[in-house]
Picture (cartoon, rainbow, N blue to C red):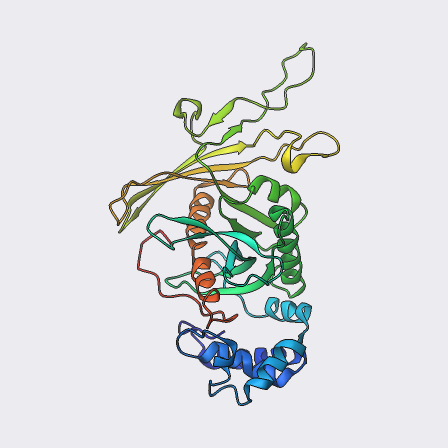
Length: 381
């Protein structure tokens, strides 16, 4: 809630006091015990291995019996809490735009055999070059990203994903609700820059952009390097017969001969990565088929155009191979400044990884300060 980087610490502390009061009002049963439990979660040093350990924290002034009573019988008005979070002052990009990051973070529960609705969660970093599937609860997280040399995020929403659910459909509903709450709170008004929503490669960015049609948002997502997109359909020749073409030529990510000339190209010098080069091609779209997520779609399949960006750097600080990153943005006709804003916003998406890492620790809670200062890299975040 309060960052060491806040220029006006007194105003920030006043906002923190108001939030604590509103959070307490969101607790509709066992309010005192739940509030002190939240205090203990946030203030306890080191990992907490069990709930009863939190009762030993100075902030928790009740016995362990009250703690378990709060967990079993306490109640929280979740919708009011979500509205409260949306009403807080939020960080913005340099152009005043809100930037939201969306990701799935697992709460691994490998030993909790009786816990309901567990799924196999894809986890990283639990062994050298190992990606393991571990039983747990996956959560979809939405957070607002800050600018500057910090990794702080403002957590806005978190929902548990049920086994077998359509992650893209559930996440799209979540994003729509978050954006509507932000608009209701006055964070976006007509004439403001559209809210940028940043996704990783696990999401189908064009589909998400289609499902969020009508909202003042731009979708920016990473694409796999084996994708194939299509150009706009060529103009119909006079006197031509037959059904008009819906798609133009192929743009094959792995075939430079199919790329053609860039719509925009930018080069940004950086301290750690050398020159960051962004190539952009305008009005590219995926060729959809009536399968998978589009099964049962009524009417012609949509043409979802966007801007494709290929980001490359000269080197990596680790000495590894610098592979290109492919990004797709739902906005079209972008200029050079827009292209640089997009790829830099995508790099800031990794700030949410700090939030996820903190929230996955047993001792962590729903705090805004889950980041650490970023290294001073010019132009790369």
